[in-house]
Image 1 (cartoon, rainbow, N blue to C red):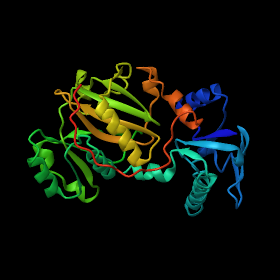
Image 2: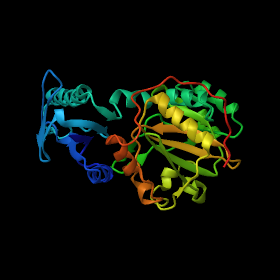
Image 3: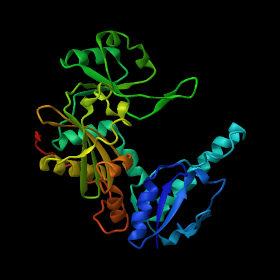
Image 4: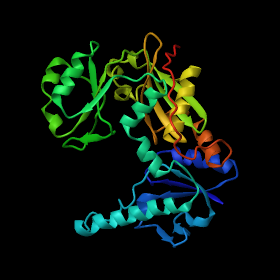
Length: 340
C-alpha cells in the first residue's frame, strides 16, 4: 500500500518532511507533482476507479493507495505558453479534471477532500460557525457598498481594518511581489471607497493585540504558537509584513482549554482534519478568532518553536490517529471569554 502526496515540484520542504515521517512509520510514499502532468507524468484511469501513475518517481497502481494528502495543485502549468490559447486552456482544464476525478474516485481517506476544503475556505461560514460555537469573533462586514462600510465604521469606536477573503499578491512593473495585508482605514480612506464597485472587501472592527496566535490542528491534536507582533512597528496590524524578521520569535503557547475545545468543535463542523487558525490575544487576555486556512503553511513552526506538525500529519495519514470523515452538525455553545 502507499500514501499519495498531491503537490507540485516547486513546493517547499513540507511534503518531504511528511514523507520522511511516513517512511519512518514503514509507509510507502508516492509524490504526485501535479505541475508535471500531463507533460512529464502519465495518468491512466478506468471505469472502476483504478489506474496508474507513472513518471520520474516510478509507477503507482491506484489500487495500492491507502490515503491521500491533498496539499497543492498546479496541474497543466507546464503546458507550453506558446500553445494557442484556444487549445491551451481546454488542455489545462481537461488535465485538472482528470486529476480531481482521480482523487474523487479513489474512495480512500483524504486530508482533506477537495469539496471539504472548498466549503471550509468560505470566510462567512467560518465566522458564523465560530460564533455559534462560542468563539469570540470580530464584528465584520463584507460588502461592495461604500455607505455600508461608513455606517459600520461609525459603529466601531476603535477603528476598522480591511482585508481580502483570499490571500493573493499583485506585482509591480519589475515583477516585485506586493502582498495585500490587513490594513487600518483612516477617515480619508473611508471617504474614498470608489474601488468597491469593482471588488468587494472585508471590513472588521480593529481589535487591540497583545499577541497573535497560529493554532495548527491535525486530527485531534491542537498545537499553538504565539508571536509578539507589537514588538515591531511594521507588524502591528499584520505580522506577515515582518514575517521573515519574526520567524525565530515564535513561542509555544498554552491554549486555554475552553478555546481548545471550541477549536476542535469548529474543525468538526467544517469536517477538516488539518487547519491553520489565526487568533488575536487582547491585552485583557481575550482570544479572538480571525480565520482558518484549510491548507495553511506550517514549516516555520516546526523550526521555531519546534511544533511536531509533520509527525502529526503522518500519524493521521497512516491511520495511527483519529480522523474526521466529513462535516458534523454544529451544536451551538455559550460564548466563553478565555483569558490567558
